[in-house]
Image 1 (cartoon, each protein chain N blue to C red):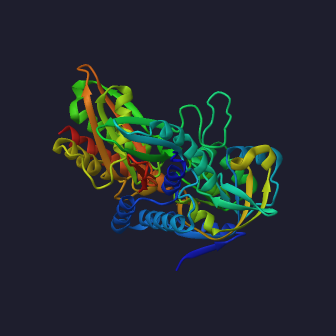
Image 2: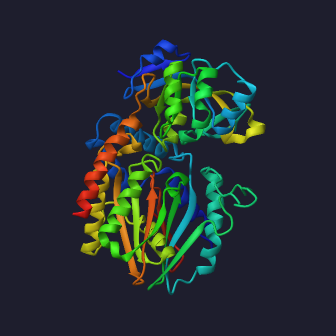
Image 3: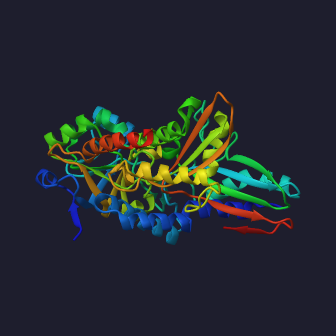
Length: 283
Length: 194
């Protein structure tokens, strides 16, 4: 059994078709903007339409591919899945086509198929069950270059967290192609806070964290960042972020890690669900 | 009515543009990133470029018969070309620069001196850009520089929308905005700390 075909399709779908929640958020942004900001949103929505209808990449930077897998503890096809993940990246690179984006950091060599050491990156999460849910997240370089880690002093508290996030996102200006989606990971350790920030991007736009304290932080950060006036593409306007998503883990008493992951407006993602009998569904 | 400028664009037409205007370009556009800027200043241009549009872009191109087809062609970050752009404008007199993110003081001064504008094209809108490219008329220095850095000469029709972000009268939307954002941030910090 292999899942190369469907996983490859999901990568292609992510590269060419923006998910409806993102399109909805972009349309709402267009409707409240004016002047150069509105021109940017109209161009973005026209671009999204051309890409979908022509089955071409939304952006020429088709990103680095990563997978986030929720793996059922009784899922019986793990070996097949493991083998299929890099194969799917190769298949999609040819079929779409995708820009070859994996470079050896020492030799500069590019294998040309969007695979390499540890890439596509895979994050595994074990859950109760017999199926597997695979989220595909191809992410561009411009926005990833704006992601960062801050090791704050715990004494600064939640106010310090808010100020650090707002300062960072506003200082990025137009570089990450706003309106962006911000994933914030609070606590854990240095690595876990960034991982939580990235996983927060997988949540559909418009869906808040289930815990009211975290949901309130998300809403407040959105409002504060949007009050900056940076606007779409850093040309000025009301919308700098489409959404802020936060996740947390318990922290060491002496540490307050803050992972900030920045995602461009072209928030490309897709999901594959594999059932216990090996049948699949791509969404 | 959409305002379309057709190449070759005159100094007078470029000077008539004001920051905040939205324009489209038809005619000939060529790409140049860091390496191409450097090499053109060292060796001279492989084609006459006065009055043309300069695009900061490394396209995804694919062989199509004897020629080439552009699949995606969004703008790259223009700030990297700040090193070369003032000399480039004085030497080659391109009238419209297309990029994203804006450029610095040296380029702003040269735009005024030469009579040219810097325009912003929506970052990430690679499919929209490729649709306005009607054909690739030439590619220069492909062997030496590789696909993203080569000089791609493209015939375009109504390429845009382009927001004039820096004009020949010393006005820069980025400069103006950074002052506003700075003031807004003071109020935001006060709110968080209260």
